[in-house]
Length: 361
Image (cartoon, rainbow, N blue to C red; front, side, top):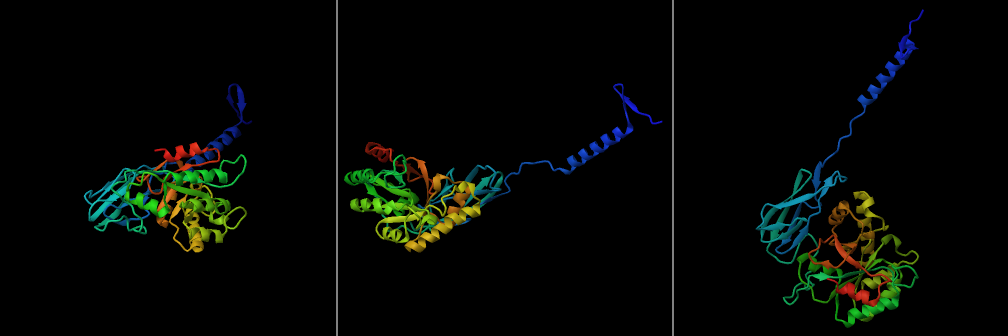
């Protein structure tokens, strides 16, 4: 006769205990085989350039990246020879005197160095192309701010604030012209930002994003009429498609005072892409535009103003001189060169609104 254990007055057969034991054994096995999750810290700090050469007065912005890139990292910067090169809290290196220095970049307990060589020749950083042909200093100038106006389409589309009517655009450009404003090319703006030099009191930069067909049919004739410089940031993957510029128009504008610069291949959110994907977006569009215009493409506007540390790393590695956001207000010559703010001009802005945007300091 089989004996049964009793629990709470109820008979429990031995087979129950066997099953209970097996279940407990399997549970212990599963727990022992699973690895506890541990937070991963910074394993390394990477720099787009580990050595730069600057002229006295030149600057270079360091954009470090932590590995793994998912770690939220705060970086600190320190120069071992401030008599030769200084560095601020944002990683902006400034050449002070001829010689050598090492800038130590630290994040998450890991460090790496950027070697800085400073030469006596004035004029900025040798890590980028020279803008020596642009006048960048005048003792009479004291202005260090410039409105970088951001447009998109110059057309009439009811209910779409991105589409500024041609007559409104004309009145805005006429106001700049009649009030004595100097409009800067990208190279001219970069020359001031690279050297942190003051600007004429009445200075503005005109930009148009995406590369719509009406930038040629509507905006271009108005800009020519008033003798104003402007920049079109082009989505290279849209060239020749419906409502976008074609190659012949890009060439013509490029030869007549309009800078043709980069707005990526697909106009996607860069921060949602891997580093390699971002490099492709920024590099492939640059090459495509250079083949069309025959000129170097050195400036980029990030789609939607969206970017992350990988974007800054990629833009630096590719050699972009300036990178533009979609908001942030009036720019300063001391702003980080790959995080330059702009002022959005929309269809809902009146001429008085436009004047306030331009004059905002």
